[in-house]
Image 1 (spheres, rainbow, N blue to C red):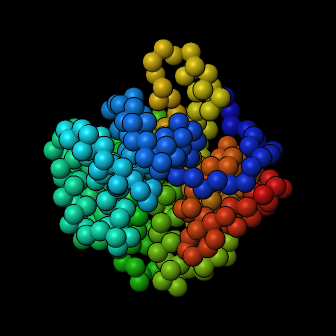
Image 2 (cartoon, rainbow, N blue to C red):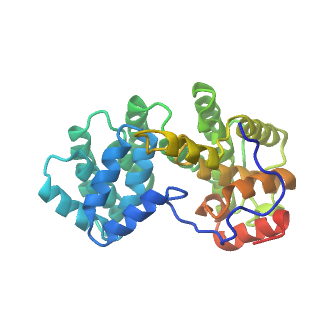
Amino acid sequence: MTPPPPLGRPRNKDGPAFDPALDDSELATVRDALARGRWADARLLLARTGDDWDRRGHRLVVLAEGPTSATWAREWQLAEPGSPDAAALLACATVFRAVSGKDAPDTARALCLTAARLAPRDPTPWLGILMLAHRTGTADERVRAFDQVRARHRDHHHAHHLMAACLAEHQEGDRDDPLHEVYDFASWAAEQAPADSPLAVLPVVAHAERYRVLARAGLEPADPARSGHWSTRRARQVMKAAFDWWLEWDIDEDTADAEDAAGAADTTGTAHPRRKVDLNYLAHAKLHEGRPAEAAALLTRIGPHATHAPWSYPYRDPRKAFRAARRAVLGTS
């Protein structure tokens, strides 16, 4: 294992990208092709992804976010009516349209259920239903969708993040409670997951999601730097456990790339496709815990792959917040 880099400048000197594709350059290329109507590239990408469910979910969600993705998914479906990939892309794209008010939630849900019937083992259509329920559904609908995802892939990364966000919104008007259900959920998920699972960082995610809710309710300062949310004894224990996990299990991207190049047919990589999401949450937490050296190591590894959450919490400009964090601990924005 290559240790994470300490203080220093990021490898990539470009500013934060805030690209949901993160460091999946192949996905970013295919997404751009899909925006131009070249759905065959998406077809090949998803076929190669296979049943790597976390990577499939990540790639489908990113491809579906485009404003014209639903249009091209329908064209793909006309060409291949029985394609589970085309159905899943159309379903996820329609979910995005529904949560933005451009389509009916019932339409999106029906398309997700159709996609689920075409690929019964695939958790991604149920991930789409969970995304929809987070914005438009009830608490029971969210739990049912999460259970369906977990029945197919028990350690599904994106679904656990979504469920943490949903649960954090319960008891919105109460002050922080260390026994709040979101903390119990995150601890349970981390304990149930394999030792190398990035769900070890989920308690940190839960902590940030609860801060988002409390700050928007006026129960925490709107500036996280003025909040004591990350300085309680429990919070420090959570941050230390997550950082120790990263030190032990983090995969160096250069090593992973070299292994991919040496492999015969494996094009999916060895690192988790959403690991940069976890690193952003962990860097944000370490910064506000007052651990600049640890935050610096994490920000260095993040490079330009910033994520809107949690830097935008509660109503902040994520680009300014991320740049300020890098200036504070790395001396560069």
